Length: 181
Image 1 (tube, one colour):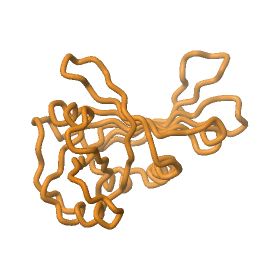
Image 2: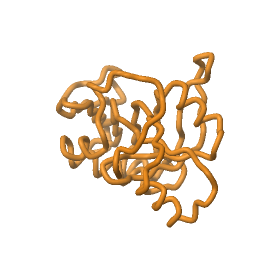
Image 3: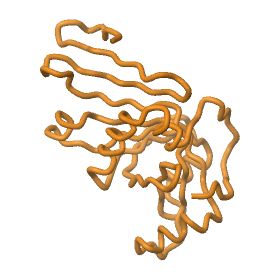
Image 4: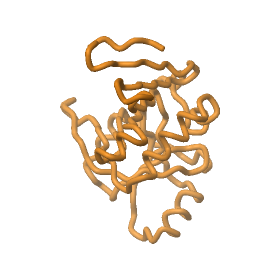
């Protein structure tokens, strides 16, 4: 996907990354997180209301070229939230069995509205989207995958931030303080 035009407030992008950068820096973690997002159609998006309080909405996630993207009906409140303040978090939908097998994935960052992007428009039309819509590129600041550690007696928490190595922690039921691996 070309970078297209963008709409939205400014932010410090030095600590942000595209999905592709995440894949290049941590291919195994990126594959596991992408599998979680591809395993269900709808996920939970957190945005900030105008008064600063949180709002959660359903959303669909897609991967277009170097980017992780979301869309929205034209004028939806989640789109208005993101146009005003692009900070977001998305929790991949899981059921209990899936969470045990593939882990529990979350991403956070800054959503930037994409306008005038021919590739994104063509993909939406190919998927049957004919009504006007908002599309957002997700610039990532953090990715977290929480899963069961081998043996099933602890949680394995993997955290990635742009330009940094993946941090791995183990949290056992009998010890509330995660231990860095």
